[in-house]
Length: 403
Image 1 (tube, one colour):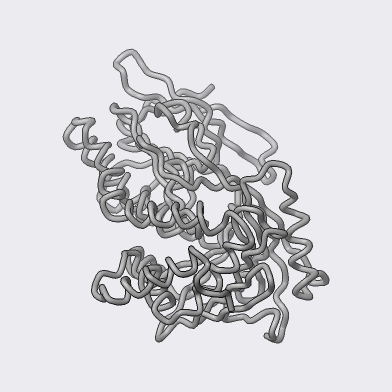
Image 2: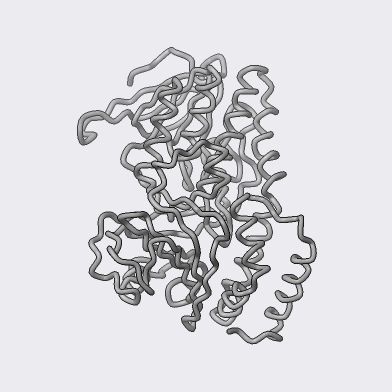
């Protein structure tokens, strides 16, 4: 093992959107940052980037492989509801290129990047954290070298099954997951009824997912066809195959396949009260019901960076708890509402049918898009919320027939 005596202000473990954002922010502020990323890992992801993310995190236009102008909800009985975006768009990215660009930006700002895998955290005699990791080398990662470095603060952004979280943060193993799987395929050259290069299709059908949804998301020259479910034994690959067959995409060339667990509830605690704070999937910040995670991951990385910087500068470990407090203050209510929605509306095909029918309503569409695009609940139109509430009750008690 190579023991490195250099002390980093912050070691960030995991180079996805959360970790790369944290490393970039910290390096920009002049801190000495090491970013450890497991090379070659691509998370299954629809790739949606709302306007708030583009603005807040300076995402350049060239990374957007598609600009979505509408979404289509498909019910168990194949009812189709179009939800156009009025005067805006949702950007789509390919995580293979997007994540790599974020890491490169962090390096350009002064962060050190190492391609390696976190092994464990120990303490030196003075109590400072020592991060042990296996450094990959060679064109195919054929050889490996064990390294260790010292850190004043650690950000665990190593995904849903975070080893940092399990090693350092109490209760980190108690978190619900949806398992996601998707296939990146060559997109049809011509848009049609089954596939539109400017539309995201979301399938709320029990045969494709008993407790979540399936999707077809355009990525420019490619498309993501995927499904999520928490039900053990459910065939995600089989569901994707069925969806491809139903939409005429069976013959589309498959470029790559990816699968991973996705957390759907923020952890109750994100730090160890000493020098470790979590971010992104490791902290459970993926939106229930939608499974959206990129914006929340990047925000979580930024808040973790703020907390880590405060710890380094003040030595006050209480600073670490501010990451979760700030996140939940801004988005906790949204996560609660989405969690209730997923628990109720996704529980049966009968309820899914009514849920898709609700999406026809102009008030529902407008409030949904405004909340999604801006990442906050819409409060300026209270009467619209009242109308949606009573319509929701009508669907809930079967007083409104699905269309």
